[in-house]
Amino acid sequence: MKIILTRNINYYTPYIKHTSHGVLLQPLKADTVSFSANRKERNYETALTNIPKLPCPCCGKIMIPENVFERPLVKNYDVSAVEVLRALKKYETQMHKPERDVYRRLEKLSKKYPELTLQQLFNKKRYYHLANTEIKQLKVLSKIENTDFNLSPESQAKLNNALKNTRQIMFLEEKKTQEKRRRMIREFIELQNSCPEKKEMKQILLMIQELPSSRNDIDSFFVKYAYLDSEALAFKLLESSKASIEHIRAASDSGADKASNYLVMCRQCNNTRSSMPYETFISLHPEMIKNCQKYMDRIIDYLNKKHLFGLEDYPYLIQKQLLDETDGLIDMDVSKYKMPYGVTKIKQFRM
Image 1 (cartoon, one colour):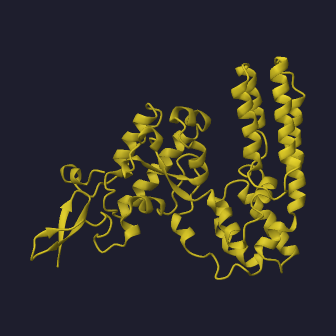
Image 2 (tube, helix red, strand yellow):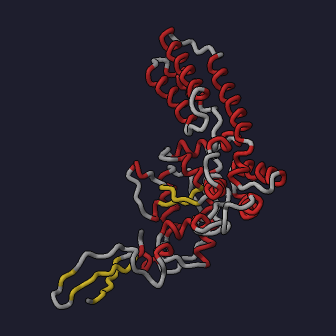
Image 3 (tube, one colour):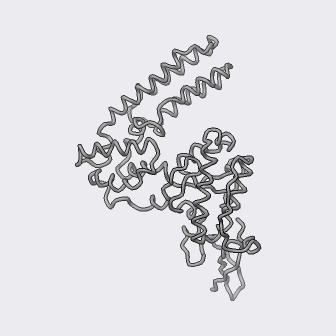
């Protein structure tokens, strides 16, 4: 049996051939063989998400590289929370709210209860946080209930029923039941779809979105993740800051699954954008215009010092892709990039 390597644009693709019969077998996956590099080093997504000190192009926070999540933070998580929190300390400034607030709350509790594990510490005040969460939820429901929306009697009855169902989700279900907030909001989405007063229903839906969330409220964070073990809790504090691949043109909008359509964004901003059109997303996050340039400056600085095969023209491709997708709102300066090959040679590496 003979291994033959054939050049195919961005990589070498191996084919297995029986020399006695001349039979060409099924080619291996394109990322199976490369220039003395392992699979992850040859993977565009992994190469981008592991660039150190890379700022999120949306919020501007320095992201936590993906490879941090591939190894244990400590040897054993069933130890004092003090030890686990000490390992997390270096990522504190990169944490989003409320993760950073949760981390600082846990630090204070660990001084008072140094013998407890992270999971035990997390659950120490769970019912205190649950009570606070329910108080905040009730305030939102009361605000809706006490607002005159000028609805028809039929629509008002539907609104009252939605408020009743929401309170049942809050108080009558098992306290450990997850995803309560999502289901509460679902009640009002269904209400919006069944009532003719579209302007009023939009206002109500905006008000119910004020329900506390684990993304923005420390009490809700403690309540939602109290069931996790110590290891999962440790990584949960970092997860929203994790570097992740964002498709500039959303996959749901026929966006290509290739590096020329990849922007690295923190998990929180990535989830927030989802498939939202960039015009809308930028109107909600105007800081993205400035932060995209910071992102590109770091990419260029990194590529000027370290060659990543297959990503040689990434700055130019991303600059053009964002310019097109944002209708000119984001136009990044890539003049400081020193391409490792001439323009004529780089064409064979197009992504």
